[in-house]
Length: 323
Image (tube, one colour):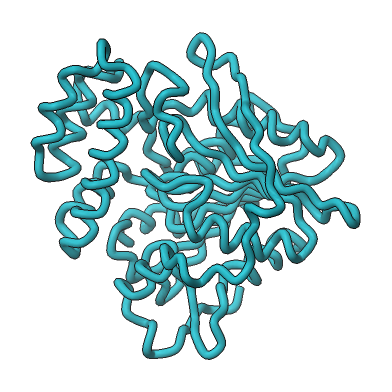
Protein backbone atom coordinates (compact mmCIF):
# COMPACT_ATOMS: atom_id res chain seq x y z
CA UNK A 1 0.00 0.00 0.00
CA UNK A 2 1.47 3.33 -1.09
CA UNK A 3 1.81 5.71 1.91
CA UNK A 4 -0.48 8.71 2.07
CA UNK A 5 1.70 11.84 1.99
CA UNK A 6 -0.57 14.81 1.19
CA UNK A 7 0.42 18.30 0.12
CA UNK A 8 1.82 20.29 3.08
CA UNK A 9 -1.11 22.70 2.88
CA UNK A 10 -3.55 19.93 3.85
CA UNK A 11 -1.28 17.81 6.04
CA UNK A 12 -2.67 19.07 9.36
CA UNK A 13 -4.88 16.35 10.94
CA UNK A 14 -7.71 18.78 11.69
CA UNK A 15 -7.69 20.01 8.08
CA UNK A 16 -7.81 16.39 6.89
CA UNK A 17 -10.71 15.63 9.23
CA UNK A 18 -12.69 18.66 8.10
CA UNK A 19 -12.05 17.85 4.44
CA UNK A 20 -13.74 14.47 4.95
CA UNK A 21 -17.05 16.30 5.41
CA UNK A 22 -16.56 18.98 2.75
CA UNK A 23 -19.75 19.02 0.68
CA UNK A 24 -18.09 21.15 -1.98
CA UNK A 25 -15.72 18.38 -3.06
CA UNK A 26 -18.37 16.22 -4.72
CA UNK A 27 -17.89 16.43 -8.50
CA UNK A 28 -20.17 13.40 -9.08
CA UNK A 29 -23.60 12.91 -7.48
CA UNK A 30 -24.15 9.23 -6.80
CA UNK A 31 -27.68 10.00 -5.59
CA UNK A 32 -28.69 10.56 -9.21
CA UNK A 33 -27.92 6.88 -9.80
CA UNK A 34 -29.43 5.50 -6.58
CA UNK A 35 -32.76 4.11 -5.46
CA UNK A 36 -34.04 3.66 -1.94
CA UNK A 37 -34.18 0.14 -0.53
CA UNK A 38 -36.19 -0.52 2.64
CA UNK A 39 -34.88 -3.49 4.60
CA UNK A 40 -37.38 -5.32 6.83
CA UNK A 41 -35.24 -7.40 9.16
CA UNK A 42 -36.09 -9.94 11.89
CA UNK A 43 -33.63 -8.49 14.43
CA UNK A 44 -35.08 -7.15 17.67
CA UNK A 45 -38.56 -8.46 16.87
CA UNK A 46 -38.67 -6.52 13.60
CA UNK A 47 -36.39 -3.74 12.41
CA UNK A 48 -36.61 -1.40 9.40
CA UNK A 49 -33.45 0.07 7.95
CA UNK A 50 -32.90 2.23 4.90
CA UNK A 51 -30.31 1.89 2.18
CA UNK A 52 -29.50 3.44 -1.17
CA UNK A 53 -28.54 1.11 -4.02
CA UNK A 54 -26.61 2.22 -7.10
CA UNK A 55 -26.39 -0.70 -9.54
CA UNK A 56 -24.29 -0.88 -12.65
CA UNK A 57 -26.59 -0.97 -15.66
CA UNK A 58 -24.36 -0.52 -18.70
CA UNK A 59 -21.96 -3.37 -17.93
CA UNK A 60 -21.55 -6.19 -15.38
CA UNK A 61 -20.59 -4.93 -11.95
CA UNK A 62 -16.99 -5.43 -10.83
CA UNK A 63 -18.22 -5.86 -7.25
CA UNK A 64 -20.87 -4.74 -4.78
CA UNK A 65 -19.55 -2.17 -2.31
CA UNK A 66 -21.59 -1.97 0.92
CA UNK A 67 -20.81 1.17 2.92
CA UNK A 68 -21.30 1.97 6.62
CA UNK A 69 -21.20 5.61 7.72
CA UNK A 70 -19.76 6.90 10.99
CA UNK A 71 -21.60 7.80 14.20
CA UNK A 72 -24.24 10.49 13.53
CA UNK A 73 -23.39 10.41 9.84
CA UNK A 74 -25.56 8.89 7.15
CA UNK A 75 -25.65 7.27 3.74
CA UNK A 76 -25.37 10.82 2.42
CA UNK A 77 -22.30 11.82 4.41
CA UNK A 78 -19.78 13.50 2.11
CA UNK A 79 -17.12 10.78 2.44
CA UNK A 80 -19.75 8.11 1.70
CA UNK A 81 -21.06 9.86 -1.38
CA UNK A 82 -17.61 10.83 -2.65
CA UNK A 83 -15.88 7.46 -2.27
CA UNK A 84 -19.04 5.61 -3.30
CA UNK A 85 -19.41 7.85 -6.33
CA UNK A 86 -15.83 7.32 -7.44
CA UNK A 87 -16.12 3.55 -7.06
CA UNK A 88 -19.43 3.59 -8.94
CA UNK A 89 -17.75 5.44 -11.80
CA UNK A 90 -15.05 2.76 -11.82
CA UNK A 91 -17.59 0.00 -12.41
CA UNK A 92 -18.73 -1.07 -8.93
CA UNK A 93 -22.28 -1.23 -7.65
CA UNK A 94 -22.72 0.60 -4.35
CA UNK A 95 -25.11 0.10 -1.42
CA UNK A 96 -25.03 2.79 1.29
CA UNK A 97 -26.75 1.80 4.53
CA UNK A 98 -28.37 4.13 7.03
CA UNK A 99 -28.04 2.60 10.46
CA UNK A 100 -30.95 2.80 12.89
CA UNK A 101 -31.97 6.41 13.67
CA UNK A 102 -29.44 7.82 11.19
CA UNK A 103 -30.17 9.72 8.00
CA UNK A 104 -33.52 11.00 9.26
CA UNK A 105 -34.94 7.55 10.14
CA UNK A 106 -35.55 8.20 13.84
CA UNK A 107 -39.28 7.38 13.42
CA UNK A 108 -38.68 4.03 11.72
CA UNK A 109 -38.05 1.99 14.90
CA UNK A 110 -39.24 2.58 18.48
CA UNK A 111 -36.05 1.46 20.22
CA UNK A 112 -33.08 3.82 19.84
CA UNK A 113 -29.76 3.14 18.17
CA UNK A 114 -26.76 2.03 20.20
CA UNK A 115 -23.42 0.46 19.38
CA UNK A 116 -24.28 -3.08 20.50
CA UNK A 117 -27.00 -3.52 17.85
CA UNK A 118 -24.88 -5.74 15.61
CA UNK A 119 -27.47 -8.35 14.60
CA UNK A 120 -29.57 -6.00 12.47
CA UNK A 121 -26.45 -4.74 10.70
CA UNK A 122 -25.29 -8.28 9.88
CA UNK A 123 -28.75 -8.99 8.50
CA UNK A 124 -28.66 -5.77 6.47
CA UNK A 125 -25.38 -6.79 4.81
CA UNK A 126 -26.82 -10.21 3.97
CA UNK A 127 -29.91 -8.59 2.44
CA UNK A 128 -27.82 -6.14 0.45
CA UNK A 129 -25.83 -9.07 -0.91
CA UNK A 130 -29.04 -10.59 -2.28
CA UNK A 131 -29.37 -7.61 -4.62
CA UNK A 132 -26.47 -9.07 -6.60
CA UNK A 133 -26.14 -12.68 -5.47
CA UNK A 134 -23.46 -13.54 -8.04
CA UNK A 135 -21.32 -10.47 -7.38
CA UNK A 136 -18.45 -10.38 -4.84
CA UNK A 137 -19.28 -8.11 -1.91
CA UNK A 138 -16.85 -5.73 -0.23
CA UNK A 139 -17.82 -4.08 3.06
CA UNK A 140 -16.36 -0.65 3.85
CA UNK A 141 -16.98 1.12 7.16
CA UNK A 142 -15.83 4.48 8.49
CA UNK A 143 -15.19 5.35 12.14
CA UNK A 144 -18.10 3.80 14.08
CA UNK A 145 -19.10 2.12 10.83
CA UNK A 146 -15.59 0.67 10.72
CA UNK A 147 -16.20 -0.77 14.17
CA UNK A 148 -19.40 -2.42 12.90
CA UNK A 149 -17.62 -3.67 9.78
CA UNK A 150 -14.88 -5.33 11.85
CA UNK A 151 -17.47 -7.01 14.03
CA UNK A 152 -19.30 -8.24 10.94
CA UNK A 153 -15.99 -9.74 9.76
CA UNK A 154 -15.71 -11.55 13.08
CA UNK A 155 -19.37 -12.62 13.16
CA UNK A 156 -19.48 -14.25 9.73
CA UNK A 157 -17.48 -17.20 11.03
CA UNK A 158 -20.80 -18.24 12.63
CA UNK A 159 -23.19 -16.30 10.35
CA UNK A 160 -21.74 -16.70 6.83
CA UNK A 161 -22.39 -14.20 4.05
CA UNK A 162 -21.26 -16.26 1.05
CA UNK A 163 -20.40 -13.39 -1.29
CA UNK A 164 -18.43 -11.31 1.27
CA UNK A 165 -14.85 -11.18 -0.01
CA UNK A 166 -13.20 -8.36 1.94
CA UNK A 167 -13.86 -6.01 4.84
CA UNK A 168 -12.17 -2.59 5.00
CA UNK A 169 -12.39 -0.40 8.10
CA UNK A 170 -11.29 3.23 7.75
CA UNK A 171 -10.37 5.08 10.96
CA UNK A 172 -12.35 2.55 13.00
CA UNK A 173 -13.23 3.02 16.64
CA UNK A 174 -11.87 -0.17 18.19
CA UNK A 175 -12.09 1.16 21.76
CA UNK A 176 -15.41 3.04 21.89
CA UNK A 177 -14.97 4.40 25.41
CA UNK A 178 -11.61 5.94 24.51
CA UNK A 179 -13.15 7.37 21.34
CA UNK A 180 -16.00 9.11 23.16
CA UNK A 181 -13.54 10.60 25.65
CA UNK A 182 -11.25 11.74 22.82
CA UNK A 183 -14.18 13.53 21.15
CA UNK A 184 -14.73 15.55 24.32
CA UNK A 185 -11.05 16.19 25.04
CA UNK A 186 -9.71 16.93 21.55
CA UNK A 187 -10.16 20.06 19.45
CA UNK A 188 -13.35 21.74 20.83
CA UNK A 189 -15.07 21.75 17.45
CA UNK A 190 -15.42 17.95 17.60
CA UNK A 191 -17.29 17.97 20.90
CA UNK A 192 -19.54 20.73 19.59
CA UNK A 193 -20.12 18.93 16.27
CA UNK A 194 -20.99 15.53 17.71
CA UNK A 195 -22.93 16.97 20.64
CA UNK A 196 -25.09 19.10 18.35
CA UNK A 197 -25.79 16.21 15.97
CA UNK A 198 -26.59 13.78 18.79
CA UNK A 199 -29.00 16.27 20.38
CA UNK A 200 -30.65 16.74 16.99
CA UNK A 201 -31.15 12.97 16.75
CA UNK A 202 -32.49 12.82 20.31
CA UNK A 203 -35.01 15.58 19.60
CA UNK A 204 -36.17 13.79 16.45
CA UNK A 205 -36.59 10.55 18.39
CA UNK A 206 -38.54 12.36 21.08
CA UNK A 207 -40.84 13.95 18.51
CA UNK A 208 -41.45 10.58 16.84
CA UNK A 209 -42.21 8.78 20.13
CA UNK A 210 -43.12 11.42 22.74
CA UNK A 211 -44.69 8.90 25.09
CA UNK A 212 -41.47 6.87 25.25
CA UNK A 213 -38.81 9.56 25.43
CA UNK A 214 -40.20 12.45 27.43
CA UNK A 215 -37.17 12.35 29.74
CA UNK A 216 -34.76 13.03 26.86
CA UNK A 217 -34.97 16.69 27.95
CA UNK A 218 -32.47 15.86 30.69
CA UNK A 219 -29.89 14.61 28.20
CA UNK A 220 -30.40 17.66 26.01
CA UNK A 221 -29.09 19.87 28.83
CA UNK A 222 -25.78 17.99 29.10
CA UNK A 223 -22.57 19.49 27.78
CA UNK A 224 -20.49 16.59 26.44
CA UNK A 225 -20.89 13.27 24.69
CA UNK A 226 -19.46 11.14 27.48
CA UNK A 227 -21.94 12.42 30.07
CA UNK A 228 -24.80 12.01 27.63
CA UNK A 229 -23.67 8.45 27.03
CA UNK A 230 -23.54 7.69 30.76
CA UNK A 231 -27.11 8.95 31.11
CA UNK A 232 -28.37 7.11 28.02
CA UNK A 233 -26.77 3.71 28.62
CA UNK A 234 -28.43 2.86 31.93
CA UNK A 235 -31.85 4.02 30.72
CA UNK A 236 -32.08 2.86 27.13
CA UNK A 237 -29.86 -0.19 26.76
CA UNK A 238 -29.84 -3.54 28.52
CA UNK A 239 -26.47 -2.76 30.13
CA UNK A 240 -26.25 -1.87 33.81
CA UNK A 241 -23.22 0.39 33.44
CA UNK A 242 -21.20 2.14 30.77
CA UNK A 243 -18.10 -0.07 31.08
CA UNK A 244 -20.02 -3.22 30.18
CA UNK A 245 -21.74 -1.37 27.33
CA UNK A 246 -18.51 -0.08 25.79
CA UNK A 247 -16.85 -3.49 26.19
CA UNK A 248 -19.77 -5.13 24.38
CA UNK A 249 -18.88 -3.51 21.08
CA UNK A 250 -15.15 -3.04 21.38
CA UNK A 251 -12.99 -4.72 18.73
CA UNK A 252 -10.24 -6.83 20.27
CA UNK A 253 -7.06 -8.42 18.88
CA UNK A 254 -8.57 -11.82 19.70
CA UNK A 255 -11.48 -11.07 17.39
CA UNK A 256 -9.18 -10.07 14.53
CA UNK A 257 -7.03 -13.14 15.10
CA UNK A 258 -10.14 -15.22 14.43
CA UNK A 259 -11.39 -13.51 11.24
CA UNK A 260 -11.68 -15.83 8.25
CA UNK A 261 -12.42 -13.20 5.59
CA UNK A 262 -9.67 -10.80 4.44
CA UNK A 263 -9.92 -7.75 6.68
CA UNK A 264 -7.99 -4.48 6.44
CA UNK A 265 -7.80 -1.57 8.87
CA UNK A 266 -6.65 1.77 7.47
CA UNK A 267 -6.01 4.48 10.03
CA UNK A 268 -3.68 7.40 10.60
CA UNK A 269 -1.13 8.09 13.30
CA UNK A 270 -2.42 11.67 13.61
CA UNK A 271 -6.15 10.87 13.98
CA UNK A 272 -7.51 13.45 16.47
CA UNK A 273 -10.54 11.30 17.38
CA UNK A 274 -9.31 7.69 17.42
CA UNK A 275 -6.24 7.34 19.72
CA UNK A 276 -3.45 5.64 17.81
CA UNK A 277 -2.47 3.78 20.98
CA UNK A 278 -5.67 1.74 20.57
CA UNK A 279 -4.06 -0.05 17.61
CA UNK A 280 -0.81 -1.10 19.29
CA UNK A 281 -2.18 -4.51 20.38
CA UNK A 282 -3.12 -5.25 16.74
CA UNK A 283 0.36 -4.73 15.27
CA UNK A 284 1.73 -8.17 16.07
CA UNK A 285 -1.28 -10.29 15.10
CA UNK A 286 -0.45 -13.47 13.22
CA UNK A 287 -3.40 -13.91 10.88
CA UNK A 288 -2.90 -13.83 7.09
CA UNK A 289 -6.48 -12.55 6.77
CA UNK A 290 -5.79 -9.42 8.82
CA UNK A 291 -3.87 -6.30 7.76
CA UNK A 292 -3.27 -3.13 9.76
CA UNK A 293 -2.12 -0.09 7.78
CA UNK A 294 -1.19 2.96 9.88
CA UNK A 295 -0.60 5.99 7.67
CA UNK A 296 1.49 8.93 8.90
CA UNK A 297 -1.19 11.43 7.85
CA UNK A 298 -4.90 11.46 7.14
CA UNK A 299 -6.64 12.75 10.25
CA UNK A 300 -10.01 11.12 10.89
CA UNK A 301 -11.52 9.62 7.70
CA UNK A 302 -9.66 12.27 5.69
CA UNK A 303 -6.99 10.94 3.31
CA UNK A 304 -7.55 13.77 0.84
CA UNK A 305 -4.94 15.55 -1.23
CA UNK A 306 -4.91 18.66 -3.39
CA UNK A 307 -3.15 19.82 -6.55
CA UNK A 308 -4.89 17.86 -7.92
CA UNK A 309 -7.80 17.09 -5.61
CA UNK A 310 -7.94 13.34 -5.06
CA UNK A 311 -9.21 10.83 -2.53
CA UNK A 312 -6.34 8.49 -1.80
CA UNK A 313 -8.78 5.98 -0.32
CA UNK A 314 -10.43 5.27 -3.65
CA UNK A 315 -7.21 4.02 -5.30
CA UNK A 316 -6.31 2.04 -2.18
CA UNK A 317 -9.74 0.42 -1.90
CA UNK A 318 -9.69 -0.55 -5.56
CA UNK A 319 -6.20 -2.03 -5.27
CA UNK A 320 -7.28 -4.06 -2.22
CA UNK A 321 -10.47 -5.27 -3.91
CA UNK A 322 -8.71 -6.25 -7.11
CA UNK A 323 -5.92 -7.88 -5.10
